[in-house]
Length: 307
Length: 204
Image (cartoon, rainbow over all chains, first blue to last red; front, side, top):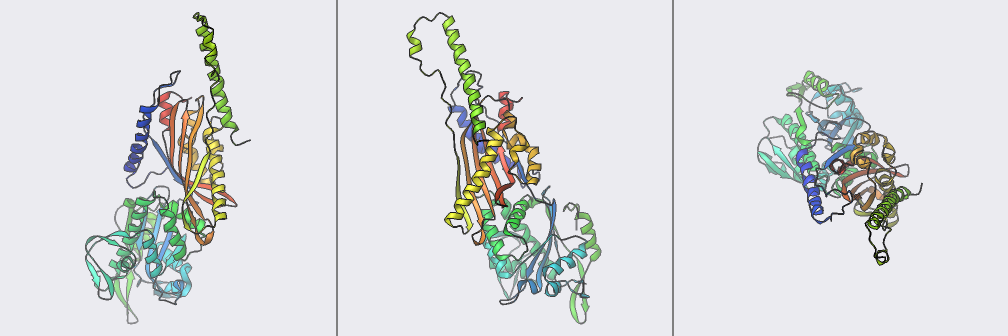
């Protein structure tokens, strides 16, 4: 039985009220048939929920590729790098944002910016590289391009992001205010792409990408009961996402992920300092922080305390 | 075992008890000295009519992707078979209901479901004399990329008459096709069965 749903009391109450109404009517219209038949009763409704998935805790590397038209999505550099841990049993989740300019060892390729790992070895190498940073075994790596992400967000009817600041970018469409912003399609992509005028640069952008993931989780959680909502969204995911999973496996994973309670998702951006390697500006990531976060969440995707 | 045999067994038991009741009532009436012989002639329905059997109604509400007419029919037939087996095993079959009711669940879902048997089956009203299905409805939303079904949500509403008391089970079953059989890998189900059973004293 799920225990960590968003407003489980309200959800249950809604069902109780709905069914209670039916039974209340029944209580009026059911004739007293006598012969040991008690009066119609109006009772509390109980709910049971469970989704079967082979693992209780799943680690997903969500990657946004900066592939331009004509380029391979899985052999371009990753613009967005988000490591997501989901506890399908308890409904907790964590999202770790990794600044794309983080200078890290890439297995078999020396050290480089983390986003180069996808160029060198596709999603598999990205998963090994990021997994090593946090000492976490990544189960799935999903990659989408700008257009694919745009269409996926459209398929769920847009999302509401909570922005920590007002910002815009001269080169990209969209002007975001501090607080809640409804974003759909291209604006959702740009919310996660802009960085030039952000005081925290790449770190702030990574935080905005984490917020997009949380916004999608909120949207799914609020609409999963709507007939066809999950299937429409999943169709867009199947069509737009590069993954080794079959549609049926993706369907099971997505249904299982609905166990996540959006209010119990914690996110952290991997901190670091700005450095200079060979004349290029890079981020020297705080790998001890990454390891600490990995140690704290590896088994249950639950982060107690801060980042 | 024929699909509805358990239902008939339950109904038959109810009818038999009804007959006993009628006989006893008639005897009692006879003992009180009723002497109008024509009374018997005007009570032709001494045998209660068995409740009509309610078929499971499975319909497709949404398809995300494409499904040919034949593929759609196959999806409906496959899911109908799975849901029908679940309903028969969980609510209408022999009592008490146990894990066998979840035979069409995936292994993991069955394992979780065993903890929720009071909600997923009629185990809560195992001492009832008669359980009759009044409505068995499943509306499907199907995911079918490239014309191939990959998963489906069945929004269910099962209504039963348990010794005259309504019991309603609503919610969702999520299914995927596995080796030609649709299996239930998740559920989100609400039921008043346990509390009806408690309130009516039907818990054994």
